Length: 341
Ligand code: PHE
Figure 1 (cartoon, helix red, strand yellow):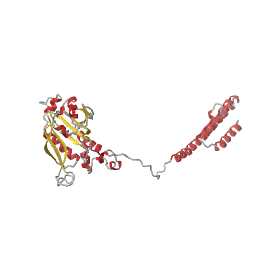
Figure 2 (cartoon, protein in one colour):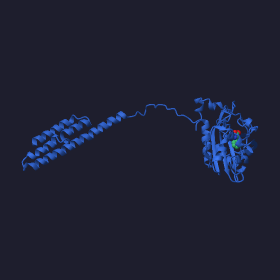
Figure 3 (cartoon, rainbow, N blue to C red):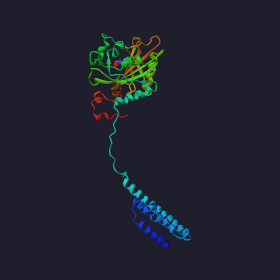
Figure 4 (cartoon, helix red, strand yellow):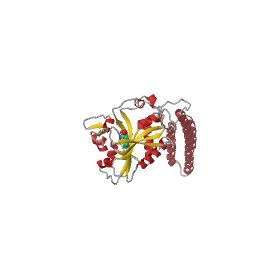
């Protein structure tokens, strides 16, 4: 038995030298230790045949052999794992000095950038964004906004009709009607979106963007509109920007105003951008006409409100020094990618 054990030891020592992978190591381990038929477990079985006196000693020897072999295999296992790990790391290594592949990063459209900026500012004042439809009926686009059929204001908005009864909305103001009919006052909403007019020159495109604002509550006055617009221009243009109201006319607001901001290029001194006036028109607005509230079933004795409409394309052009609106819509990526958030 002693000879047998010595032979097994020397065999293991020799065979383990030739092992190069964890698979081979597992096979060797199985041959000697793991299987019931493995060489060392087989020795254990033979123990039964030994005499009573020899058995404890032989048992100890076999156990010692088992421990020795286990240790040898564990040592080799650690060694192989280390080598294999190293090889894998080398194979998977990334050459950080290699030039990377260029990925093209897109940019937001300049009008989207302005819209997002405005939505952020108004959200801070408690406004919610509502999006309403682009194909409207006569009631929502005109009649409910106090612009009946024969009203001359309709001429200002050359309308694209899609059928006798339906048209592409000419402004975002129908969003006022849809909100007044569906939301219980008081509320503050914004309606950004595309609008359409048959108009096409350097500063007009048949499709452009507006953002409507509507605030309905008790005791709303022109001062509320002015206060809110001051906050807006400070955040949008500069801390020192001022607003100026000029009387105007819209059928759905009474009184109506056109609002200018002090020129953000020259600060009001007069330059090319503001055509020497020091002021730049940015929006139309006013106090919601009682008739509009009544057309939507809102109690005009209890509630008042203000509304305004901003041209998003116009602001995007002014802020970026673009003097032709078609730059925004010709889809030339070389032009559009210059506008960064
Ligand atoms: N809808 C008007 C326009 O398109 C703008 C506006 C909106 C004016 C709300 C007053 C109040 O010109």
